[in-house]
Figure 1 (tube, rainbow over the protein chains, first blue to last red):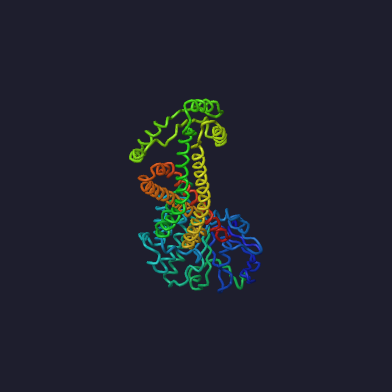
Figure 2: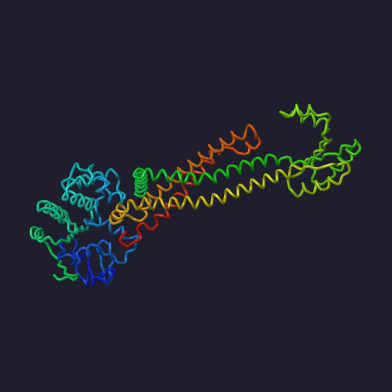
Length: 220
Length: 299
């Protein structure tokens, strides 16, 4: 199995001297389903941000799809991101746009034809169980439904890697299982899925490889 | 095809920005139109004056007024001397009786002339100059003064030269105002685009994280700035047209010749104003959005 994400001796030090990640090394293969686990402040979100190029490593190398993310220029970073699906607090839904427009945004950015984009938006919303809700505003939806809209937006552009940061936080068990089930479905069709979570119950019900972090270090 | 779709999407977003902030967009257009109207007005007045000067310049003349006691011999001698001067193209004699009759034919002057006891006007020789060069006119008038029988000399070249100088000065002031107002327009669209981008900063951040390039993010704001500038140019042309029409209406009954100097800008003027406004609006918005997504996170 070839690596789609590779961390080699990665340290991330934030301004002020806080080390969010220390000498972290691991590999994720193409099509893997992985949990990043650990308590708050362990460095889970930092790993996802480094993969998405939101942060750059202070030391070490982050490779994503054979590209050194730390060395990507501002002009080439967007092309990496178009191959990622992000379900993260940094990429929230836009409250002033409809559900359909939110899901369509990655397709508009990629320059997909409007007819094709409309078809893909409907398919993505249908997949997450929100068919026919295109014209609603996100604030009219429940927390679980908003999370599913975010997932629909993350997958509508058919990314090879799906990154999710605490996707089941603040969701009840049923909603959390629904969301995890969706990630499983996308993993089943070959998408690499990386979920940062400290929700032990959800992980127990949907078992997969785990990378445990503690105070910035990979411990298991 | 993708590039075309990106442009179409940018136009839709530009329109959405205008709809999302209608009052701000309108106020910016009004401010820009006001700023553009001032130099446009000065330029329109200067161009009108220069066009009038060109019409007058076609036949610059020097009027030579003969002394009251000058007889036919002095007149013939003066005419011969005048014809022999370099720079004089033609000479025409206007007897004092003809001059008085011409004066009486001017509207409103009939009663004045009729009230005169005699004819106070002198015989006049009108010399048409070969060109309107002030140097030539000055040399010719200097030599004419020394001819026997000549009482005084009056050149309309001086008036034309003065008018041309005033028109050039107005045009220079217009150009200066234009340059200053261009900076003001760029600054205003810069500030407006910044403000609009700030109100959409969450959308910009999200789009950037979803893979939008800096150009994709900036393009709607740049197009919106360009639209605002173009609309302001059109507005400025309208303001100037209305101002000049009003000014001409006020001047025409009393000063018809001055009223003719100012003309309502024609369609090419309006188009030039729209194009200038659009270019300046584009420049301001482009400068404002250059660093919208310069951080590593923003890409």
